[in-house]
Image (cartoon, rainbow, N blue to C red; front, top):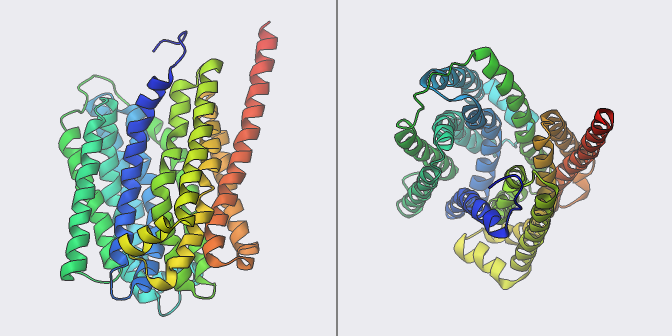
Length: 434
């Protein structure tokens, strides 16, 4: 596609649909886990413990996921691949030592889970057991994303899709074995399934990616890679900290286990439909280089956001929602209504996220990554403020998704203001040149 030719809707869909399907499959694996946890002996406690353990492990995992972007930016030869691999090893060592200390130094574990995250004495043992498995997420994700980055450099993205399909099949197999034959019980059902599934996906990425490492002569200095990577670590940590703070707020509410379980199940279900919205910034960066094409992207994003929200609202208010949650996922009866309420609140996410992602794409095109980082910081601050000041005035199933909505909405406002400032700066630049 050339710069002077307008993009067509067909081209836009050809780019967007594979990304959307991959994201939906990824989120579907979390719904599989929710279904498995709902079939354990004590589903409410198991789901709540798994949710807290995963939210903490995800903080340590987030910087390792950014290795994919580092690989895309720097890997052009075996030397540069080794340099990125060395930086991955150093980062992985730091975060693995941190999670191992939390998982096995009991006073530290109690401080983090009980004092910071508000986990009760009755929920703490199950949460700690689950965390001793989910804490390996940084290891499996870092390994996976390094080789997925290589695959993307060579534009062989069908290999990534293949790995995702194998991951889904493997996780379904594990859930079936755990729930039918009781190979493991409790929150281990979710923790082992997730870590095992990502490990299998990582093995597939290694199998395909090791043959695609570029043979060029380009060299890279580690300092240049760190300069690019450290801001990504900071922004990813800020994004990943939001959910643990929300869980900490829920843990301090009445019926904490029910609220945590309902929010976990509702999120894993709703994000299957919400998740494609997170690819809009990539769509904007590829197709939004001209004013005419930006109009097409904006119209598409708006229609997609409205359609996604409508689908979630329709499901949550119709008998279909109860059927999916109670019969297919088999949510515990005491959490069913709370889960539906959470899904109804989450239904407004596509409207916020599509708007936010579109603005993100425009700012990245203008090389204003610092403004994007400011937006992430505001997101975290707004989320924490809502949890501390306003969340107790709402029921738990509404407070949790509402806290996320406030965070993402605040980020969107910052990005919208950033777009205005960048536009004014570009206009002044043109006037000075004239």
